Image 1 (cartoon, rainbow over the protein chains, first blue to last red):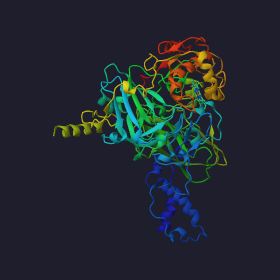
Image 2: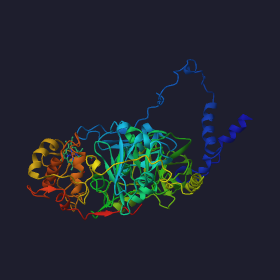
Image 3: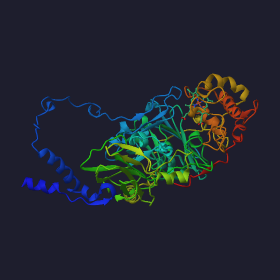
Image 4: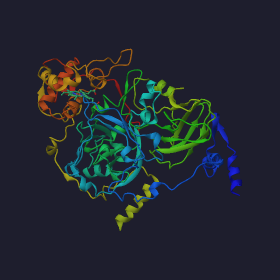
Length: 430
Length: 178
């Protein structure tokens, strides 16, 4: 009986759907891939195995008891990746999420990417103020403890730095990983107060068009946000994945503008000034502006584009021959939800639909996967996302043709991972 | 009764358009404490292109030279030439054939930003340690190094925001694309 079942699973009829070994996503459902993959490994083990399973040591000794604030297993060494500190840029810099080692769609708080312009302030919430002033009927100041009493909403949203993936525009980086090339994107459940609630309490005057948001860090990082966005879905985020927002993410409170370039979601938010015109802060003039080939620069390029990326296998991983792989990755769009992700194993000649195997939330990371049977010949893996507004992720050539290479912000281009005959995966350009 | 029914219909509505918050100021606990703009004079440091938010005081490049050399040059070079890509604050030409160097002089559209940024974020090792007077002086010096003001031109709340920046027309506002 058991042998019968095994035999059946050893001969799965794998439906090829695109070049170079891409299989139907159907195989990921039910018995499909699970059956195929398992059957192969069981078949190997079944042959006169010397394996003698024993009860491991940890099953014979009680472990430590409950702890106050948990941490990852000592056998899991996941880390954000950042450059070395620069004494001439105190506290400045970025760190990237280890995308290739994460699954699902939520980024653990300790691994959420960072970008700071003057380091992480150590804010005592009792001394922190949130001021709303400018074009309002009554300027107001809010205390942290009081803000906790407001009605809050929770939403799962990605956050992406508009400089993410910028390096791809220059070429090179054969050693790049999903983390080093694309790790300036993360996703969390953010809980907080709609900014509209606080603005309405202060009473926005009719001539107002923008808000100027300022952080309490040493750089007093500021960004201007159109009032209609602030009144629509911007929130004052106080919690991140259920716990108070982490210091690196703006404790005790940050602005959060869903779907927009990360820098606009000002951390350590301490002031919202309602204005008629944008404040023209340094980080919306000198930086975070996109210079086009004609030398004109696009300013206030807010929504993040539709984008996806295969995280496994990805740069610096090695794939072994034989077997069926669950090629998987993440997709997101600042304009809506992910409707479709296609995958190619032959550098974009043929495509197959991937399975979406997470929730397809608005402006949130979405996980996709597809089974792939690699035959050992050179392959180039790519993914291409389409969002609910019909926008399709562009190729690198298309991005460069449209926007040139002076600009390094807002690059949503398709990532190509080359797989060599020996199974090494590298960042390639096709 | 009235409130709770309103809340229920608000929740139902939220279910249909999940991203858009239902306006809730009426039901809000309203715990903000009133302040006056005068109370915020030392707190609100935003200096806008219109001149709004600029403090009293003034300065010239000649006065700013010594401050720049002691407080800024270690990171930005004696002439603003910088010691890394991030710290070059002088020079560049947006029309150059190769990738243009984008600095205060070649790229920034508003002079107000120079004062606004320096007063709040510089020097990077001790932000907000300059007095308003010193901020005017050293902002004038940065503009002077870029050939945008004279050595003895007096910059204040009125004159500084009006300094004409070479790339003022180089930007296209995309804020209507949301």
